[in-house]
Length: 258
Ligand SMILES: [Mg+2]
Image (cartoon, rainbow, N blue to C red; front, side, top):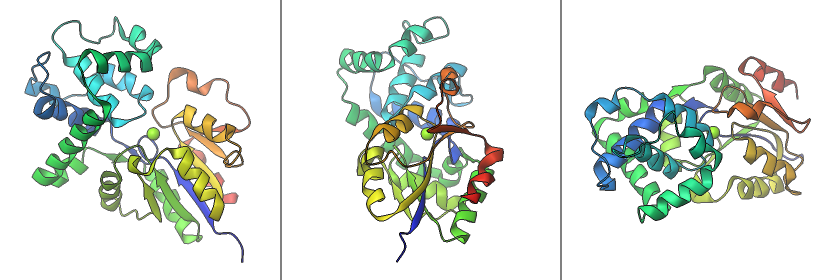
C-alpha cells in the first residue's frame, strides 16, 4: 500500500487574515481580565486596528504575545509607538520577557485570558466574532482541490484548536486534522506526521518555523513554502534559499502539479 499524501498549513496569515480579531480579542482581554493599573480602555480603541499593531504582528509567535503588545500600545505612560518601535522589535523576545517580569505576569495566564476573551465573544455573539476573520479565498479553493484529489489537509496553528475549528467551519473547511498550541510545537507535530504520511508541502508565514523544519533531520524533506500574502517581516523575502520558496497566492495552483 502506498503512503497517504498530506499537505500542511499554518492558519493565521495563511488561511485567514484575522488582524481585526487579534486586536479586538487582545484588547478585550486587557480590558476585562488583565487588571493592569497602567491602562484605561477607551471604547473607541475597538474601532480601528492601529498601524503599530499591524507592523509588530509579524514578530508574534504565540497568542499571549499579542495581549502583551496591546497593553504596551495602550498604556498611559511611555506607550509603544512609531518612535520606539524599532527598539522593541530589534530585541523582540527579550522585550517580551522583560515586560512579563516587570508586570509579574506569567505567559500562560496571558494565553488563558486571550482564550477567555474569545470564548466570551463566541458566547455573546458568535457571528460578530467570526466575521472579524477574512479568509484567503484562493487558499480555501486550494484546500478543496486537494480534498478532491484525495490528499489529506492538516492545519497546525499556535492558536487554540477549538477557535481555528469554529472559524474553518464557517468557511466550510473540514481539514483531516487540526493541531493547536495544546498539541505541542509545530516541529514535533510535523515529525510525528512524517512517520505515516508523505508530506507534499507546508505553507507557513513564519519564516523561522520553516527554517527549523528544514534544518531538522526528520522533517528536512518537507517542501517549505513561505506565504507571501501572510504576516511577513520586511526582511523575510530576502535570502530565501532553494529549500524555502516564496509562494504567491496566484501560484498556489502550480502546487497541484506535484
Ligand atoms: Mg501564521
